[in-house]
Amino acid sequence: MVEEAVSGTSLLKKLRRTERRKKIEAVGLITPLFVLMLIFYFIPIGLMLYKSIDNSQMREIMPHTARAIEHWSGKGLPDEPVYTAIVEDMKVAYPNRTLAKAGRRLNFDLVGFHSLLSKTGRKLRKLKGPPYKEALIKLDKKWGDPRYWTVLQRGLKNTTLIYLLATLDLRYDDKNNITHVPDEQAIYVSIIGRTIYISIFVTVLCLVIGFPFAYIMANATTRVRNLMMIGLMLVFWTSLLVRTLSWILVLQNKGVVNSILMWAGLISQPLDLVFNRIGVYIAMTHVLLPFMVLPLFSVMSGIPSYYVRAARSLGATSIVAFFRVYVPQTKPGIGAGCLMVFIQALGYYITPALVGGPKDQMLSYFVAFFVNERVNWSMASALGLMLLLITGSLYLILGKHVSITNIKLN
Image (cartoon, rainbow, N blue to C red; front, side, top):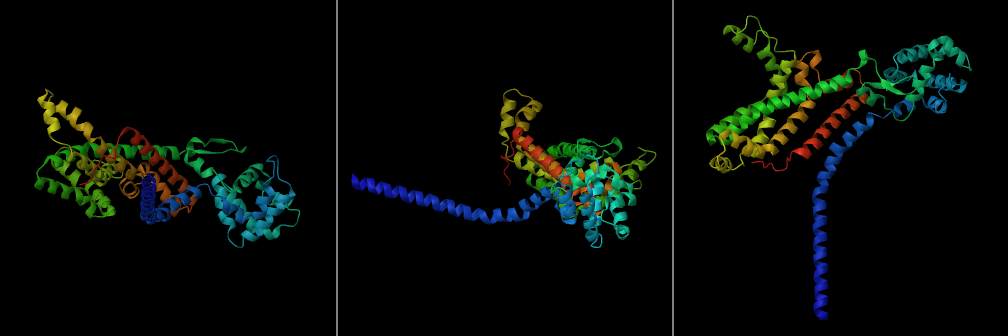
């Protein structure tokens, strides 16, 4: 009995060691992949998210002012030490050309701050003091306006919410309360709504066109299926820029479509099919259609045909059998296709920029605008965060209602 107990304990220890070794091997196998994802995916996204609220550069440009104005009550005008501190900071920042960066940042919060800092920086030599309070106010009356000091105090904190608020058409008022921007300046909520609307419309178009295409391809002969697959894959054989430019040639006033319609006598003058929303829908649907068809085809090719035959043998019509037996089994493909098309449509930039008009630009266009034109990485990061939130919300919604885990790639 003792020997059996000892051998049983020894066997249990060996099993535990084996399981522990397998766990260590599994961790070792996934560690390189995790490190790569951490370096090239999670860290860049984390830096982007942090950039949308990061404001540390301002404290580096104006360190003395940041410390002096930190305890200002916000009522009236600051005391003389704050004026002295900002003059000391400007004497260093203006020759180093960093004062302009601070001006651009503060000008985003209150228009006129950039010109105020530039004007003051040029005339620093004329200031006599200390004391500097009266001299600065005499130099420019804006230094006697509490609004500028409120913005400066808010702008010298380590983090800021002004960029995230701006994406929702919100801002801080003179009393540091969050309020809506004037109607003539409210653009970002409408841009986000336009981006979502265009993405949803393109997704629906891809589903309407892609579902019958995938169904025919799944039930066709091998030769026909291969030809249809080649035709579908032609989209990937040319660059996105070339595909978009080709649609401009096809849809313009003297393009192929209008020429055929006028030759057939269906229209008397060319239709506006490009540089508007119609052109965006057509070009984006053409580019994104394969991402809808491929998941649908993968699911449809695995659905046994005898399900529909069994339903028809039990008295169901062809239409009833199709919609009540066949279509529900394609939900994983529909969910995956819609998710792939919608996510890619949200971030589209080249196609709407070239084929669409001024009122058809999507959120990604303004991300590129703030990066390339304004060099405002914080605002671009805030808009990118909005795209990430929209994408994540859609994924959570689809994950609750549609299972996309049953797709088997052939």
